[in-house]
Amino acid sequence: MGLIPNFKTLATRSPWLYRINAGSCNGCDVEMAVTALIPRYDVERLGCQYCGSPKHADIVLISGPLTVRVKDAVLRLYEEIPDPKVTVAVGVCPISGGIFRESYAVLAPIDQYIPIDVNVPGCPPRPQAIIAGVAKAIEIWRERL
Amino acid sequence: MNFLTLFARNLRTGPQTEAFPLGPAFTPEKLRGRIVFNAENCEGCRICERVCPAGAIKFAKSPDGMTFDCWHNTCVFCGNCEFYCPTDAIHQTNDWNLAHVQADKFAMVEHGLIPNMKCSDCGATALNTAPMVKNVKPPLSEAELGEVRSRCPKCRAKYLKNRKVPS
Ligand code: SF4
Ligand code: SF4
Ligand code: SF4
Image (cartoon, rainbow over all chains, first blue to last red; front, side, top):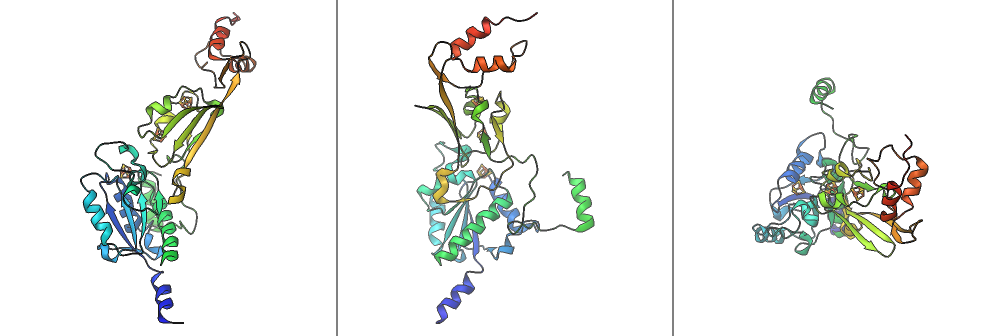
């Protein structure tokens, strides 16, 4: 056994989470903050933590319907995240456009621009639902690594 | 739970982390979650499709009748459809656990069918919808309801018009 497999088992224990706000109404962002910051939900039990830089991220949580105005910034940020990455769409906005569907100002669904792996519908989804989505994402990420 | 009960509980036991996803999650009875549809009770008025702010509900004609589809991935769980439905055919459950992988994106649909039938009076093909008889006085009996239901809209109107009201 070489060094690489050991690094792999170590690394798969603790993914970094990163949030991208693609023009969301902030409902989903509040729920994502709650998921991490309030001891009642505590997403860090799953071994993951939010990070401040896209360069460290493993799992990306995207909220918002991708408004025309933020499109370039979001795509640039997404490019900066190293592979392999797992993308979670939080809320119905990125999945289909939700309440903003068919508006001239949004480019939803976001999977036309960014490959999505897990969807968490809800407007906004409960913190528990976000945790369930993150748990699914971690499974996918372990396979991908 | 109102905030005073929560406050009292937190003073007593301190805040606790929920066991989910390693255990069950606390789910309020009235949480607004996934939509379910009961084709049996639907009267085909399509009010729900009209009031849905997210355009999640679509009715469509098919050879077998009229299909109902509600896509959970665009529904915003506002409850408008349940509020406006005259016959309680559409309900909001407190099921919130809808996270799914991308491959299932378009499978997150509540599907229903209002089947076609032959009118028992004139023989025309019509939808087997629940009759709109909420405001009929005196209320219809079970047998009468069955009679009305087995007819097409025109024959239903005729039946109700010719109905002998016992005084
Ligand atoms: S899904 Fe709902 S809560 Fe979340 S960003 Fe969109 S509109 Fe806001
Ligand atoms: S009866 Fe209810 S479920 Fe059926 S079309 Fe009317 S509003 Fe929709
Ligand atoms: S809950 Fe609201 S958004 Fe969802 S199907 Fe009903 S009316 Fe549409």
